[in-house]
Length: 256
Length: 273
Image 1 (tube, each protein chain N blue to C red):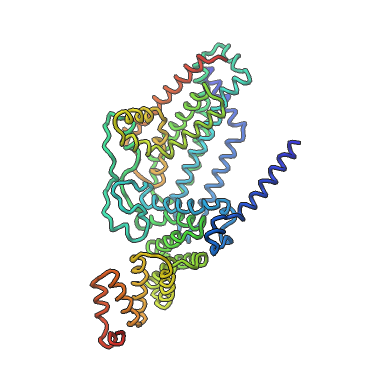
Image 2 (cartoon, each protein chain N blue to C red):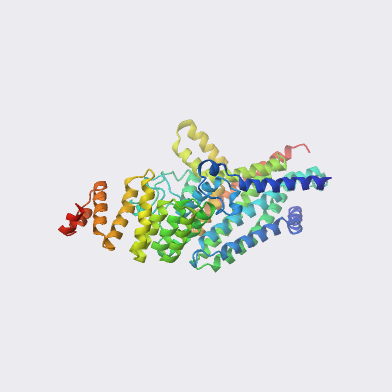
């Protein structure tokens, strides 16, 4: 546990030291500030598009940080050969995977929390009715989303190079974001063997769209029922455990 | 040495960036009458993709109109609900129909429960939320006439901003002088809201002239001519109004048009005939 904490602290220090986070933070502030100052035909109180852009930006920036920070952990340890003293501590390979996952997770959650606070500050300035429950759900779902993304990147880094890992994760993010409804439609419309194959694909792919509360938050829809929150939470935990176990298994068999 | 390479690359990028804003194959080939000067420089980088981005912006406005939910295939005959008028005529399902999924098919069940299915419309003051998307649609592609007419309609009819609507439409007309749609919209607003029938007659006549030079359907003709006929009526030009009502009655036989024609005095009808 101490080893996992040490690795996590190392990654948090890296987040503070590197400029990536600050650049994204400044960009988000400038962009949201610019959007808030826009005046359309002297109509006051137009806010939904600011919320829309704000939520999309915070999720995307958190995703970028989660992917880039986590993806370089294992490959850099291997290429700089610092993985050997780490394994000689002795630490099991599963512990290394868990440590790197926790580090990536913490980095993502810290940056996401700061982005989210800025978003909430802009959100509060709008005149529309605000639901604290929905905002709370948005925060929890954001963390669950980053949890899955970090686990996915850890899984890919156990057998892929850093650049391939980042490319594939971004591709999955784009495909799921853009085509999950189409995939669902194909699955529901197919029968027999095709339905089974699409079903397998549907269950294997990470459903990042479950965690996207952008429309609910932007357009002031009702919060999700508690049972659905629990379902999504359960899905995220099970999917992460499966990915991390697979990552550990592959990494254990890997020749270093 | 390395700096030299970077310098050369930067120079090449700068030159190509300047060139790319000057090149517009579509405009040169098909739309030479549409000047590029009214398009912001950074928008010119999008090239012909501008019209796609502009259309997407209008679609986004449509999504906003439906509370962020896209138009699904549920027998919703008119997807572009934002388009003026027609939408309210269609009866809506309260929810978009989605196939029933077993509770044991847990992921599909979550997916259906998490996504919004209610069919709602913005109303009252909430209508203002679609304005940024319509505004951006016209900014990205100043030749997207629909962006101007929709903005004009929502500003004037839904948000009561008549002056801003007219100003915006006039700006659109300056960029698209050959657009019958913008002329017709201006004419309608001057007729319906400003009650300035002389100006409405001028714009609607212009719209009618432009419309006759292009292929169009009967509904467009009715839209322009009915306002033009009413403008004539208000200006006391009964003869001109009757001619248009006769034409409208041929297009869409209607008791209202017949009554309008009969409503004139026998002397006026004699003069016309």
